[in-house]
Amino acid sequence: MELETIIGLEVHAQMNTKTKMFCACDNNAWEKAPNTTVCPVCMGHPGTLPVVNRAVLEKAVRSSKALKCTVNERSHFDRKNYFYPDLPAGYQISQYKFPLASNGIVKFSVTDPKTNATTQGECRILRLHIENDAGKLMHRANHSLCDYNRAGTPLMEIVTEPDLRSYKEASSFAEELRRILIAAGSSEADMYKGMMRFDASISLRPKGDTKLYPRVEIKNLNSFKALEKALQYQQKVLEKLWSEGKQPTGETTVGWIDDEERTVLLRDKESAADYRYFPEPDIPPLSIGAAFLAAVTQGMEQLPSEMRSAYIALGLTEAEAAMLVDEPQLRERFDAIQVAIQEPKRASSLVLTQLRGFLTEHGKSLADAPSPNQMVELARAISSGTINVNAGKDVLEKMVLTGKAPNVIIKEEGMGQVSDGTTLQKFIDEAIAANPKAIANFKEGKTAALGAIVGAVMKMSKGQADAKKVQELLLKTLTEGT
Ligand code: ZN
Ligand code: MN
Image (tube, rainbow, N blue to C red; front, side):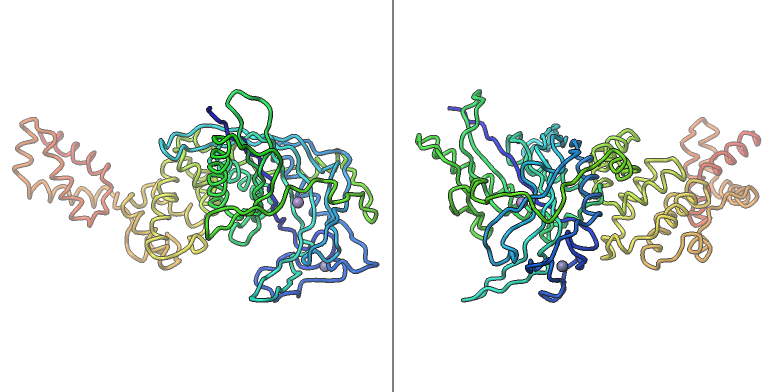
């Protein structure tokens, strides 16, 4: 029997607001001492009241729009009750039946790992809601420690429809989602810092069947790699069960053990009833009007997929476009050069080939790259003929190494291209005198013989002569001479 894989994702993304979701505590706990960015509100003390951070709403609305969701005019918060030591209030303030936004769609490209062919995929978004994060537990030998710095950090929970058909589609979608959230300015989505976490649901069904069979939910996957590996693993487990006629009859929840590359059964899947949801009494319902929507989404950056198509339309390759979409620092420099000189090929060669190459070669990061203004100055110097392409490379390498502006380097090193007619003519006359054989060949109709003369001129000028102008002048000299 041929089986089809059905995958859906729930994604939690930490939002990059300055303060937490319901209090004024610092929302950036990275490398801060445990329990130092906390207050009675995010510690869930009785008698405190949550106040919704306006920036959370603004950023979540922008993200919803970027995911092509409908932002619901009315939504409200609910308490999701459960006990766990990292949850000081004993409940999470989330959204249940009335989420902030619903019904979106994400388009993404999938590259087949075997054939390298790229296809387009689509995944519908069921909902996006906002909720607060819990603290963090650290398990030591025989005890556990609690750090509440993360408690109260705003999260967006994004739930997809079960539209994904392979582990590769799942990770490609997740990567595109990450790009979208970064472009919407709502999350740094730094995987290394645990800012984006996935729960993946997987089930199989006989190909052609339209109903969904009970799923297995894999909890807390913290990287694209883990997402792929866990789905591949669980798919094999399910395939074996189906082949033995023992396919799942109920939903289960498993955890992924990264070191051992396997999942373990945690529990039968919890149902909504287990959480005793009820409307959060301390926060009034949200009402998002047209004016707020318009103000918040005004001037929104292009979506990654739109950016990608625009770069491809300029003549860049898929890979070049993807690099620009993924690296805002490269993109900023490319865009600045393109605006200034309107030569996409030169801009991509300077930024994507040469700049990246020199940074890697000299052990530097993108943060050390010459500023967009300096890159524009360099591009202009080449484009206007002040220096030739090869000298441009040397100048860029010196820019990376010294941090100096290109015009300063060109002046200091005397790298300016020689295009002054009198100087070039002098070189040409000397070269003609020194290469009588080449001249004789030329006069016999072998135009290629001129290469030797141009070469000699380039040598005399230490590579700085304007080659095009040398060609012109040389032809003129020889034709007028005969
Ligand atoms: Zn607080
Ligand atoms: Mn959640």
